[in-house]
Amino acid sequence: MADLFLKQAKQYWKTRPGYPQQLFDFIASKTPCHDVVWDVGTGSGQAAVSLASIYKSVIGTDTSKNQIEFAPKLPNVRYECTSPNMSMSELEAKIGAESSVDLVTVAQALHWFDHDAFYNQVKWILKKPHGVFAAWCYTTPKIDDEFDHVFHKFYAESKPYWESQRGLVDDKYTTVKFPFDPLDGCDHTGPFEFETKQPMSLDAFFTYVRSWSAYQTAKDKGVELLSDGVIEEFKKAWKEDTSVEKSVTYPVYLRIGKAGDAVKPAI
Image (tube, rainbow, N blue to C red; front, top):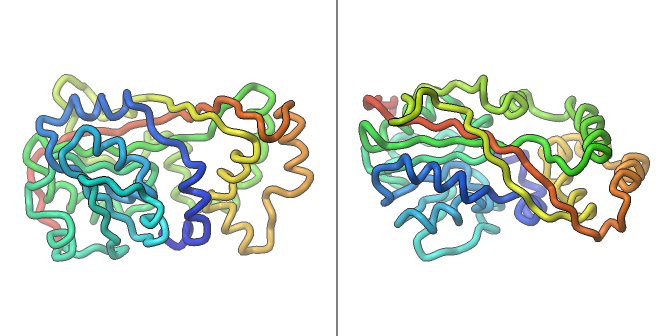
């Protein structure tokens, strides 16, 4: 997974959306203690920064050193580069002891993980029984009907270059394995829907597309997804100078639950 974003870490940092405060407020309202968070697949720290304003300590981990280099440095955030297949000993050394974490979060990355192995580690490190696991994704952006029509056509044409795991995002995480108990006051684990808005020029939008793993995969195969013809279609639908910013909306879908009984992962 880290290799998919190796070449475009800077584009990812510059153009990927942040997440709405309502999302973090909702998660925080369901977390009994606000001491320690493990933000897995932290990337360039989009979620870690917001978590740091609510929780005393945030540990952001990623398998990509390139991504972490662009993450904001805050006094209560510690970043760690971890192995793709993290062992129990590495988990304990870099994150913490059993039942030591109040919240584990995964922003726009759960679809890349080995779910069985990861969930065992999550259940081991979360405080029992009310430690919280929260994972969310955002789907395709929305601007207006005309632009969205062009984008959806373009996105469909990019499908051959996405990894199969991307389908979990397209399904809004409804089909992702999620062995956690509903939170108090909730009768299900989601997805709960939010949205985030970001001002973006067309030039910035193109940079966002170039941050896709599918874009880099296509490029490595000699295919330029943003061909001159495609760029011209987008410009016509934009109807403004490419430097003019418009409001881009990303739907966000949250799965959230509590740890329940402890599970000991294999070492």
